[in-house]
Amino acid sequence: MAGSQRSALVLYGSETGNAQDMAEELGRLCARLHFSTDVDELNAVDLNSLLKHQIVIFVISTTGQGDMPHNSLFFWKKLLRKKLPPGCLSQVNFTCFGLGDSTYVKFNWAARKLVRRLEQLGANRFFDDGEADEQFEDGIEGAFSNWGERLHNHLLEAYPLEAGQSPIPDDTVLPARWSLAPALDKIKASSNGHHTQDAEPILTGPPPERPLPIPDGWTATIVENSRLTPDSHWQDVRQVSFDIQQRPTGEVLQTNPGDCLAIYPKNFPEDVHRLIVLMDWTSIADIPLDLSLCPSLPRNLFAPRPCTLRNLLLENVDITAIPKRSFLKSMSYFSTDEYHKTRLLEFTQNLYIDEYFDYATRSRRSILEVLEEFTSVKLPAERLFDIFPLIRGRDFSIANGGGSSTSGLGTRVDLLVALVRYRTILRKPRQGLCSRYLASMPLSSTLVVSRKPVLSPIHGSANAQRPLVAMATGTGVAPVRCLVHERLSHPNPGPMLLFFGNRNREADYFFEKEWEALHSGGQLEVFTAFSRDQEKKLYIQHLVRQQADKIASLIQQGAIFAVCGGSSKMADACKEAVFEPYKSAGETEKREQELNALTWWQEIW
Image 1 (spheres, rainbow, N blue to C red):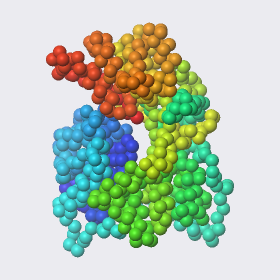
Image 2 (image 1 turned 90 degrees about the horizontal axis):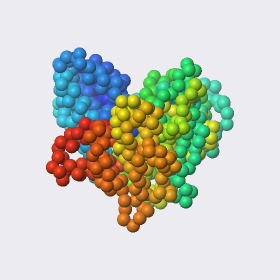
Image 3 (image 1 turned 180 degrees about the vertical axis):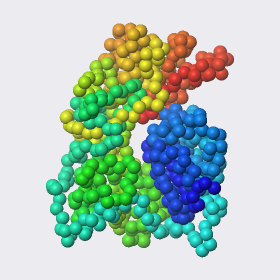
Image 4 (image 1 turned 60 degrees about the horizontal axis):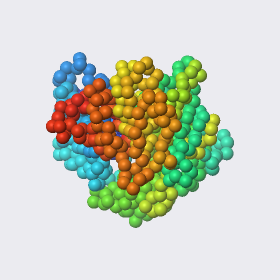
């Protein structure tokens, strides 16, 4: 066997963080069975790394229309190289857990494609693959827990421990993978315990504007943050526009339809101070930390230097997320109350998974709120990164219109953002972290953003000559706006149809004047469906059926379909409406082949 004895490599491809969380949990599972364990994202390893471990576990989610997550694309390209011989991975023993949503046609395709390619190259499955479906009654958490328990039992049987050795008990705290101890120890050892801080900490108001060192990031200035929906409307939808500065090298940001701009939100000072006081971290919160002393730090930690514990909490650590079961388990290790410890451990057991959902997921409790309820828990600051999740960038489809431009000074980028505000089942008002962050930022505020390119591009001069049938609901119209104007920048673009749906024409017909002007100029045919404006609800699939002949004609000309909206059910309903005439004509199979050969592009919000 080429791999090291009793070693495990856990690799993840994650878009929203779920696959990464599960990979970290599997890493802990293997560590408790005395495997020397490494956990990393797929893009961080080469194929030779697979040969250096006794077992390899993949955890991967499916994004878009059967696509691989962005942090697995480089690895996937390496795996697809034609020069790789069929048996080059014959010494690799692997298993895979996939995350997906069965309302999509290409359910769990990323995991299935990965497994198929690994087996083509000779790799061997040592344990049956698992799949989680967001539509399961107990969600992806339940499926993962059951699969993980079976994997644990299989590892004990197939890879038995040495004589006299036993698994590390669940009630024993594992060594920290990422530890702030060296930096904190230096604070305690220096100046006989007397320290100075650079400035008085900010305890109220909006998050500070300190720029984050985002890899391949761009400095952006907010130039518009205007509400598009009436003040009386239940939803606050805004057009947020940025001027993206050119880099010192002279490079200017270039964007394409379907690209996303990633915003990296920050926590609010009053929330951070509540946590600091609650955890008894006040004495160390504002003393500069030397992070270079720490042997390892999380890959996605974007922390400016120098920084303090308060800075890390403000800018990097997600304290408003819904706690995962692994977080509640970590809390149990540091509780001094037996009832609290027992209750926290119950939430992590499969037998009580419904209670976990009721307590955390359905009630939308935040990490901070849970810590305020279990007051006996005092988490050690040195385990900050081992216990708390990091803030992830939030992706928004770029919505640039005809007035947007790129110049020698930079690039104007428009976003269409629906701010997340609601009440929980406990009647507590709640705001999304990024929504609250954006709403708090005045004009001229600066931040660092990044661009996430579209995986399946449908722009360019060749595609612009083909007809376009765009179907969008709500803020899903953002990438359609960008695509329509990009097509108009080319000579003689093909005909374009836009089917747009929302609740009320008066409240949320986004970019209405723009669409009407293009419609009047003969550049775009617009069909609108506002479901709440009449007694009988009207949806865009109803309009698609009404325009069946027109759409059929465009299909014959090689039309591109862009479907962007709030749920996969909308996309399925639209696709069904397009197929319906062919079913009655007995041509379903032929037309489905024709239509599936076209580009279906779907943005889900």
